[in-house]
Length: 178
Image (cartoon, rainbow, N blue to C red):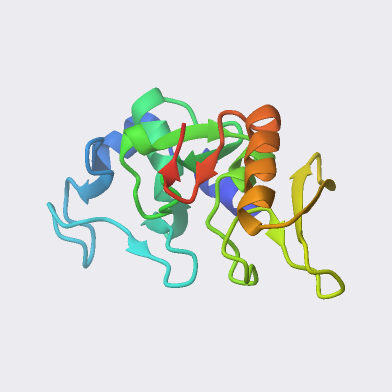
């Protein structure tokens, strides 16, 4: 986390946060309790970044991510590490959708990369072969899982390895498992 965020977070306590904002744990939406400049009491706080999809709220001229504010609001403490969105939607800050995670765990629960032309996580189609390669990343390193005749077989090998290595941060193409 960049130092600017740490400084911004250090200035906001749960008591102060609850005095200026209301958080609805079911919807994940923050609303202003009092009018503050152009922000009127009752209006939705924050804006969604068009590139990342994350919601940020400006408090005392500092941008703070709404999912981190939700943790402070609900627990009374800032999250020690990352906060993962279970459904991979960075704008869904409903309390049941948020969970603590390390940076590595958070990377395990992400959408399929746009450069993946096979359409299945962990599956690659090298040009020099007619087989499909399965690979998983763990500890910052790629782990080769083998070559397979079909993309589905390669994906099955990837999911088996993911179940073993990252059991709480598995995302299938059909949705979130845990």
